Image 1 (spheres, helix red, strand yellow):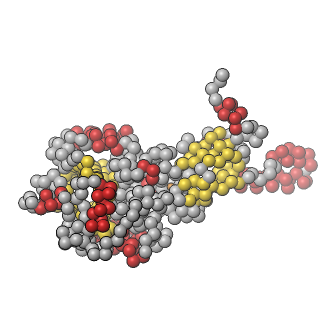
Image 2 (tube, each protein chain N blue to C red):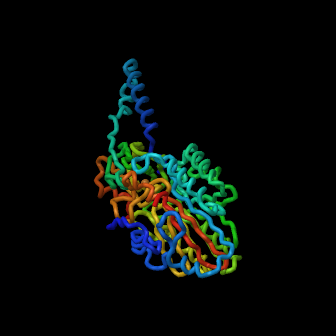
Image 3 (cartoon, helix red, strand yellow):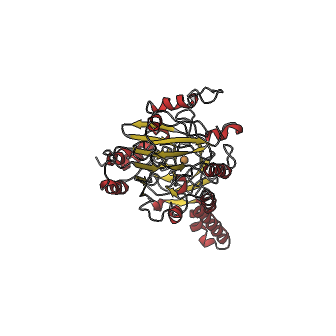
Length: 142
Length: 318
Ligand SMILES: [Cu+2]
C-alpha cells in the first residue's frame, strides 16, 4: 500500500518537474505531446479539520490523485496515522497541517495515535468507477 | 455532571464535602483520598490506619502530566505550575523517599521540554522513577528520545520494577502500539514479563503498579482505559494489597475493587473535564484564579505492618 501514496513534498516536486517539462516542450515540439500527457491538472485538495477530538468529515470519498490535508484546530496535538501503517504524520500542534496524495483506489482507515478513539476513513474511488463496482472488484470471486 | 460550589471549605472532620461527593459518584465506597489542601487528612482506610501503631512509615510521591511545553489558554505556562508543584514537594514536612512520574512529562517530546522538565523535577532532591505518556513518544524515533533519557535499566518500551521498604513497585507502559478505535495497551511481551516479575514474591508483599493511562475502565468513549488491563491484574490477583496509580485524565478519581485500589492523580499543567461532562476531553479552561485548585500531586503513605496505603491528593492551592 505504501507505493500508492505520496507525501505532499513529493507532489510539489512532481509539479515542478511538469512545469519544467512544459518549458522544454516550447523549444522541442517533438516532445510536446509526450509531456502534455503528464501535465495533468493540479490535483484537487480536500480539507479534513480536527475539532474537539474528531476528524471532520470522518469519512471521505475522493477520486485518485486527490490531496487530503488535515488541519488541527484543537489546542492539543493530534496525529494522523493509517491503520495499515502506510502513512503517519508527525504530531500536529494547533493549526499544523499534514497532506498526502491518495494516488490509487482503496479504503484508508486512519486514527490519532495519541487518542486512538479518534478514527476516520478516506475512500479512494476511480473516477469512472461507481462505489458499488469498486466493492465488487475487491470482493470474493463469485 | 453538575457541580455545587461549597464555599464553607473542609468540614470539621477534614473532609471536603464537594470533593467527597464527587469522589463517591465515581468511586462507590472504600474511599481513601481527600481533597483537603495542606495537612494529611483522610477518610475510610486512613482512619483504620490511625488505629494502628505507626511503625517507621515511609512515603513516596506521585507527580503526573506535567506537559512541559503546553502554552494554550488553559494554562499559558505549564513550566511555572510544575515549578510550584516542586516547591510544594520541597516544603513537605517529611520529604518523600522518592517520586514516581506517571507520564506526559513533555507536551511534544521536544528535547527542550524534556530538559526543562527533568531539571526542574530533579530540583525536588529525591530520586524519580518515570513511565512515559503518549506525549513522550512523539519524537521521530517514536519513543527513542524518552528511552535514551529515562529508560536506563528498563525493558521493552520502558517497563521495569524495583523494591523499596518491602513494597514491590512495577512501572508499566500502556501508550505504545495503540490501535485505531482502541484503548491503552500493554501487549503480550509486557504481560509475560509482569507474570514472571511477580512470580517469586510472597502474596503478602504490597504491590504498587504505576502507568500512564488508567488500568481501569473510566470512560472508554474517550479512550480512558486499558484494553488488556484485566490480564495484568490477573497476574496480581493473589496479592493482599495492590495499589494502581495512573495519570492521563488530569483529575482525581478513585475506585477500590476487592484488594485493589485504583487512583488517578491530578496534572501539574491543566485540568480535563469529568468523563462525559464536555464534548471532548480537551483542556478545561477554568477561571485563572481557580486553576491551582485543579492542579497538584499525590503523596502516598505506607505504614509498615499494615497492608493499606494512604493516598493524599495535594492541590497546588486549596
Ligand atoms: Cu488526538
